[in-house]
Image (cartoon, rainbow, N blue to C red):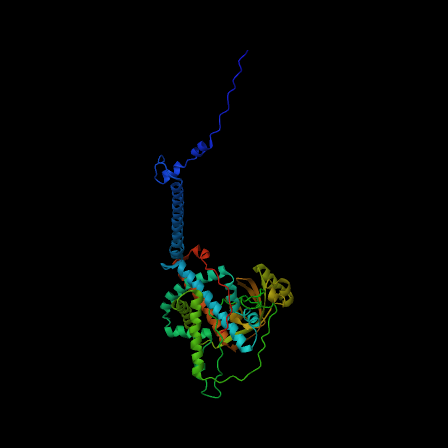
Length: 464
């Protein structure tokens, strides 16, 4: 009988006990400094694993802590110490820049709030109606725009900080300085406090009426120099904490006149002094800066005003007004063609409507109406001052193009306070341009400002 052929058996699967031994955690023993050949109980091994987990968590926490410290050092020390500008070897740091932006915003918020409260208290209207009126008027429309456009605010503040240093040096050469009393007088103007008018209260039945609180603009916005009509903003501002303002322009109707108890000069003076301190304290609170830092910003503004007063003198008691019209085109050749057409008898109004790139006045036949000559850009204003009545003047080149001008009439009028201040602002603007030109090469700015503009706070109305 043939022998049975033996088959080769398949390898046997390891027993369960053997499988457990294959995953014996000797690596854990080595990590914990134990002898892997030393026998341990299950409890000891679990305790060892727990210790390893705790050690890992502690190590991770240490790493996170180090990263947080590095971030704190970068954000709190390294970044604020970077420069946004250098003026005559003196640096303007990111930290100083950010503080200035916060102070500027807080000042604008408080000035808008004061203006809203004035309208509400004096006319008996709602905050919505007051907001629709105030936020479409200058300088409050500019304030509101900057509060909602960080880049515009950031660049303006950077320019102001550079100008402040240049102005301080140039003002010293002019012999212009400001005292603490000058700064307080500037703040008085800011909140509408006239100490001389208040002192007259109760002294004479015909004395100046009791003043109302009407804030003076903090930073006079750059005047609109293009010779055309000013249009209201198209966007409708919204105040947080109040019902959205309607799109239609509100008519502020005065409330019925009620008898107001007569207050003494001392009572009115106390009211303004309290308001002044409250104003500074609130700006400091909103900005997170000290009151002394707020006063430093106001001191710089007071110095600008002192320089403007010094340069303008005290003879600004009259303003030249002119009734003029113009046609604005892009090239000198176009201007010469229009002048030739006018000399040939063509209608000024028809040509303005057909060719003027100043669409505001062009639609009205080029008419600008009566306006202070100082409102216009310098080349245009100079041409109007020198023009003979009825003559065609031009082409006059300005930053907007080429003008063909005709002056219908001129006359001197007693200047209003606003016109005097506007004229001083123009003189100051020209002087600052000259100072910057003279100091060219002694200052420089960096791009660090653009990435370090503090987040803008929400505007919240608060009653006085």
